[in-house]
Image (cartoon, rainbow, N blue to C red; front, side):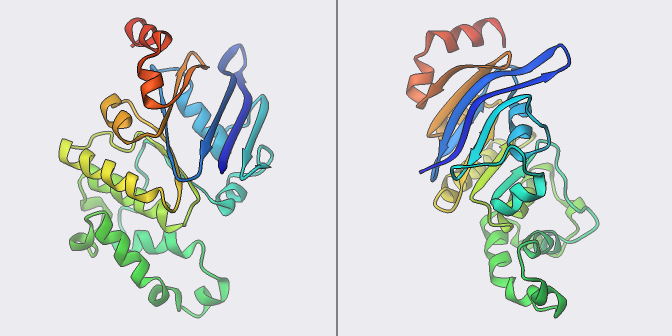
Length: 244
């Protein structure tokens, strides 16, 4: 099933064309990597999908229904989750309460009003803490986590909202090699419940975890296909030899 379909998407900022006629599709149960040099339009494309930036033209379909006119909140309710590059957690709250607040976003109002959601969500939160190696730090303030651990916490918070599509912008930035390896294994384990679109500069990392890659350069799609097809593309090799 095609979960996300982008058709002829263009975004202009005045005289600057950030995206030009971009088309791609992401299937359910897959990881779709977006790569390309700095300034190629990757982050702009992610912001168009989540609703932070309005495209100039083109169409975005989620589960075969148009969402281009929907707000970021409406898209989140439809099942689109996002974690951007800059970590954004509640630093003065505990690790546990950060995930709890995210999980409560999909709890019923009556459950919240009667203060039942903390107990009802306990097992779900414990599973996420264990999955992201944060169990032993669950009672500590988020500010006390390492950068890599804060990245994990924010991904866990995004997952607590139960998305069907998760957008990740450079989730391994600043991580150690062991942290990157664990993150890659984690992301592969998630695709049974949600598809992932990921922007990442670490080519080895994104090659190893992705089912499909799309290469952008100067706002245009250079190549979209399997990892092998992209690696063998002469156009992609030229981009990375001349523009990176």
